[in-house]
Structure formats: C-alpha cells, structure tokens
Length: 226
Image 1 (cartoon, rainbow, N blue to C red):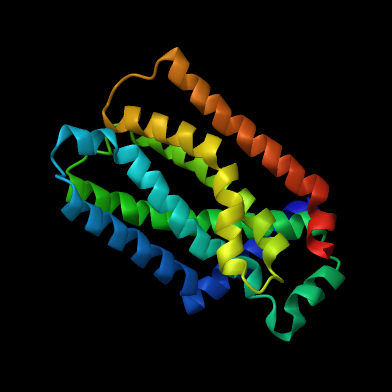
Image 2: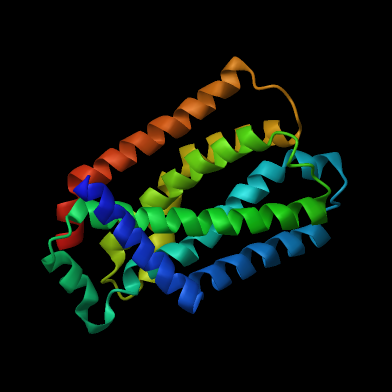
C-alpha cells in the first residue's frame, strides 16, 4: 500500500499547487475554449460535415491543451532543486512518475469537461446522449495522454527548449490513441451503436494504456535519473 500512498501524495501535492497558482489550468482551459470558439466561426456548427469531424476537433484540442499541462509538471520542481530533493527522498521513482501522471490526468479531465460544455453550446452537439460510454472513453484516452506526457515531461525537463521538444516527441506516439479516440467519439456523438470493428478501437486504448504505464513503472528510475 505504501507505493499507492506515495502516488496519491505526489498527485495531491501537484494539484494543491495548481489550485493555488492555476497556471496550467488557466492556460489549457483558455486555449481549448479559444480554439473551439474560433472553429465555430470557421465552420457551420449545424452542418453534417462539422458533426462528422467533431471527434477529431475535440481530441486535437484536448491533446494540444495537454501540452500546456505537461510542460509544467516537472518544470515546477526545478526551482530550489526541488526535483533533486524528491529523488533523494524515500519516495520511489515509479511513484513519483505515476503521481505526476495522475495529477496531469485530473487536470486534463477538468479541461475536457469545460471544453465539452463549450462544445455542446457552440456546435449544437448532444454529447450527453451516451454519458457513461463517453466518460469511459475519456478516462482511457486521457490516461494514455497523461502517462505519456509525464514520461516525456521528465525526459525533457532539463532541456532549454522543452516547451517545443515535448509536443514534437509525444504527438507522433499519440497517433494510434488519437485515431481510436476520434473514431469512438464520432460514433458516440452521433448516437450510433458501437460495432464489433469499432470496439477494437477500445482495445487499442486499453493496450496503449497498459503498455505505456508498464514502461513508466519499469523505466522510471532511468527516466528520472537521466
């Protein structure tokens, strides 16, 4: 149970700092709302074509907004050598990495909820038709984005151009996850039944999460020390 407590302690610390400063949430939320608002003027919100591309628009917004969250995850530990202090403490490296990912996950979910509300208003999309399935999809896809962001956020934290390098590295790796999330989101938003072929995309999300979470556990020591 100790590693689990350590994970939640790290996540609680990051979330408490974020609630006090609101640096990442304000930036990511403002970015997501601005992009959704701009696209509502660029496309006809009531057209069938806009509804067909709704899933792609949402997940691109979520992913780009996530980069603003990931960049702060480890960067806030650099002043006063806080990261070195964390690594020197009894806190295990996997607990630190997974705790950071959990904090990223919670912040991304908050941004997604606000974005979905704005999306429903501007694009006249009834996203509450399948709430539980959409919630499960968001949890699976967002955890994959969060764990990948935490891993590469740790790897790039000491780079001068980390704000540029982090998105360049993680976006290509997120392609299978984003394709799966977009396909499923389009189906759910159009209130159509999920076919066996589309359920395969759900398995892609599960496998993606398992693979990268396992890699984070196995390579946490190497990632954080380097």
